[in-house]
Amino acid sequence: MIESKDFVVFGLTSWDIEIATTIKYTAIEISKKNRVLYVNPALQRSFQIFKRQLPETQKYLRIFKGEEPDLVRFNDNLWVLYPRTVMESINWIKNKYVFDFFNKVNGFKISRQIKKAIARLGFKDCILLNDNSMVHGFYFKDFLDPKVNIYLLRDAVTLVSYHALHGTRLEPLLIAKSDIVVTNSEFFKEYAWSHNQNSHMIGQGCDVSLYSDPEGKLLIPEDVTGISHPRIGYTGYLTTIRLDIGILVYIAKTRPDWNLVLVGPEDKDFIDSELHKLPNVYFLGRKVPNSLPGYVKSFDVAINPQAVNPITDINYPLKIDEYLAMGKAIVATKTTFMNYFRNETYLASGKEEYVPLIEKALSENSPDKAGHRIRVAGSHSWENFAGKIYEQIKLLKNSS
Image (cartoon, rainbow, N blue to C red; front, side, top):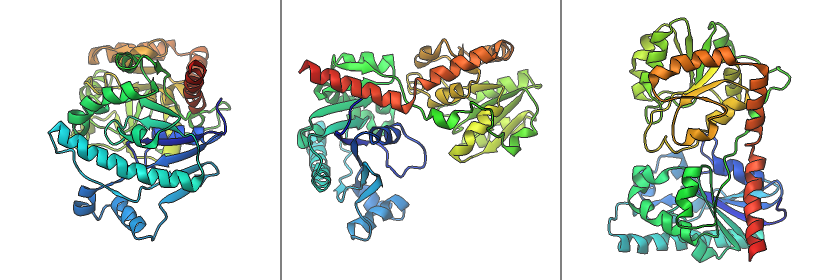
């Protein structure tokens, strides 16, 4: 445990984003024993000019006018900073020397706002935690001179088009100059280790408390109670970027006596898919996060029918921890990362393997197996995740 220290935390996502994010949960967990400044991404010039009507743009414009504060207190130990500056939109620049010049200017401008917030809060000897921000956060170590600089590598961000050009080039350099690199998979750890030997796999955090039902009192939502068993379910955004519609169609057609329950918003491909014509497929739509555990509880088997692509193959699917925390039997697509969960899940190499594995999951399920899954998910709590970051900080200090 590390206590009474000052952390500056930043990443790719805004504090105000509706979905739960790793870096937000991590910041909240760290703030239980330390002071934390969470830095939002600055407003980009292109948004200021072309996307002024977006709520997030309007918020920044109000902050610039002094109508809202740029530093907001979330709890006793955590503050959220909305940098009072505009970041130049430079991702279109292909020349790396020109790009790096303007990226450094952006880094300086944002760092100046962070320094002002640090001074206002009285932070000292800050520990800098960067969540996958390999471009916008590249120069923060240089300008902020933190006591410890940590890079959290947990997502294949460089495979996303926005970061592909310059992120692919800058991330290895950022990893190399970080004091500590922590990752959520062995794949990322091996990649980081090739640039910085102080790289460590620490797994992932999950809000398992939300998916905890030790006394069995969690209610099943009304819109699922009328669906007969067995229920084969999925919760999350239904998008072909990450999911394989063909797997779901195959399951539903092969076993019409099973019911597929899909909980979450759909992209256009899902809306237009054959799934909507199948009588044993139920789309229950978007739900508030606090209601999702009840839906997972209603499933006989939970599935994660991922499409295999460069992003899904190496990413940590948080929903696996959520399913495990409810003790559910899980059938998922076999990917490079899912080998991490090979002892807790049934892994299918193709759509044809899903049906026999779901049958196996149904027949082999037991209270003992459910208990094991719950214990595994419990070991992935945000408290344990933050604790592993603390452990690496202590090891670094002891070795210096």
